[in-house]
Length: 248
Image 1 (cartoon, rainbow, N blue to C red):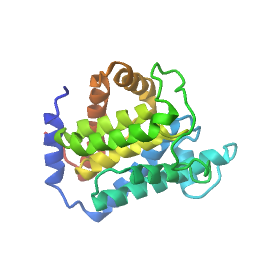
Image 2 (cartoon, rainbow, N blue to C red):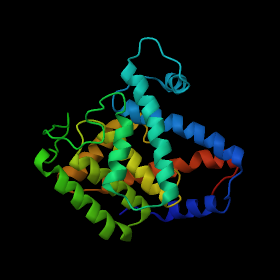
Image 3 (cartoon, rainbow, N blue to C red):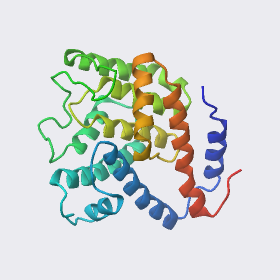
Image 4 (cartoon, one colour):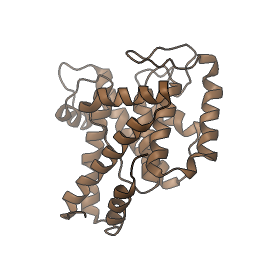
């Protein structure tokens, strides 16, 4: 089990500076939305660069890029805003929330399947794990929500967020957009507990996929938990920079 003590100290330090000045909050938020959107989409094969993603979010069409790639950027930003709204409501995770996030991810891309559980079987390219049969998706998602309500509250917030991410994507309930949805769900959990949202860097994609596969095929969550702790710790860094402080 990873040592969450260091992260707990970092969170306590950041909490001591709250409420943060509005100009810092605004600046950090703009940067976060851009990096989160770029990296999450890039993991799934979107070819927009960080700067091109910024331009696309400003409503400018980038030459040589598909409309789908533009919609993926715009939709992801909208999904982040929706997640932030859910954080303010502080409601327990539900299938409605999950379907609503997914609906935003696939808006104008695949409206027929946006927010709709898959009706066909799928294979995850390059993974050893085989997602459950389409006939079992509904019951697996209900079991997932039951686990979240009954057992997840006893876990450390970082472990709970990591498990939500890994267990959701293990079910792979949608035809497309599961990865982006899972990363949004992870941050929804972290933000509800006052942690900064994390950005999984596209450069760590292979490590990320291998860690998820270990969780899915061997029930070994340690690699994914360790990766989660590292990206959570990195999520504090922009705050220290903006505040001009060096945490202990």
